[in-house]
Length: 585
Image (cartoon, rainbow, N blue to C red; front, side, top):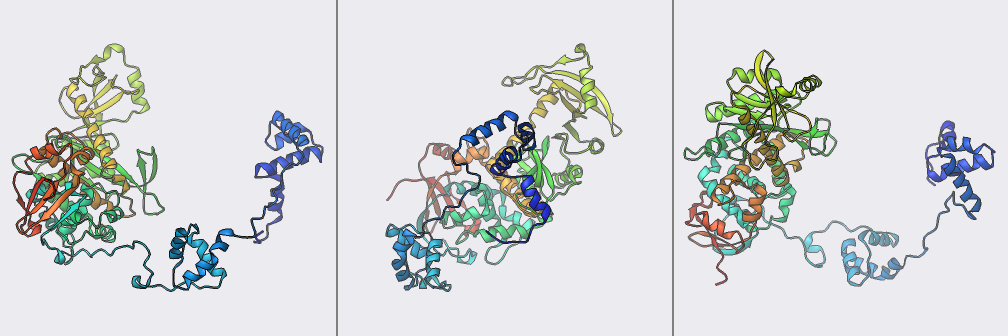
């Protein structure tokens, strides 16, 4: 028994008067009944039993020949057969400078299962000290050893003729869009940090590759760090390791992230077919959970957990027509939520020259005073109003004749004939339209608030499209692993969210090329088209990426990406040719 600080008398008495374990409580109850002679009803009440269960306890006690209230410890075997059988071999191997891990592996070959910890105990009993740290060439050569991968350095990048297979062949489908959009200009416009070994443009392409390949955490890149195709994509001799990837986002400020997003908007606004429009945008907050203990992290509501917990609050904007995120900001603190919509509008006006015509969001995004400010700015909005008790009573008191039925133009929708009551309300000094909506698939009525003059049917159908951002958030959590960006520093999450915006846009641009995938989510595009190996052949004239045959390859062939080679600037102008694998020879 371990000897510690002495207990006071009150604690000693409490040990007997308030038994904690079931066996101890049973012992004290039977002792009070049989030895002290207390009535069974009183004993049952004092020790938390029902009268019937205590009588059953007494019945079993009287018929149990050997009741076990106090467990007698059973001593283990005095000998250790496995250690004794391996003792001579362990000593022999240690004299040859084998470590405990190497000895454990040799013992397994001799059908003796001893863990490194057990080997350490044997050596300690025999008087052997721990081995000093040794270099790899001083260790016995037993089995496979970790290989030392080269350090990422653009100066060591070369395109000497060679051939290899890569599991990341689908990444090269994004290269034509990266070239046409001038991704290098994003790194310069921010400007993002870089070094002589890994310039800013190469660092951005490396970080973006992780997002495009749906790698959950930066440490998971180590499983692909030896893949030459993954290193070829950003134009490096080797892909950066997890330490660099984790450290890089710590060097980027929120202002640099905002400039990066602004440059992304300027590069994607092709006059022929821009990625983002300005007609209507969906807005929402999302909480990225943080699992740890840090006093700086604030608690926000996490919808996936239905509770408040430490998390990083992120503001997101999505273009429903493009199906891609167009803005993100994770550099938020409590009390700044209501004003964030105006920071976004300021960003949008700087990037596009005008405010968006319409924004759609839920009731928790901002306040009534901010809604009035939006109205004075001439921006249309549709939002929900919270169901207060006063509003619910008002809805309950409405007569049936006050409601009118609206038929929605949605053949696939289950609830197509909601009942609507419309009125005008004054909030924060402004007059808004308020719609009470029933029979829309919810138990409680929906309350819409807007400053638009569109018909009731159009308003309901447009707000229903807001579910697109909910679906996009679900896709970002499942495919882009948005909730895996756990960090105590919001600005690190901020940069990762900016990468999410760029990656989601690149997936939408790729989806436009692929017939039948214009409305597909990113994880389906990745599963069918991107996640495929390829044979890479580098010659003096071009880099050929040959995709292996698979079911969805005809869709890639029909997209036009394989029609002609494209010069790649970060490969010193060497063209990239996408083709199909024609077999050996």
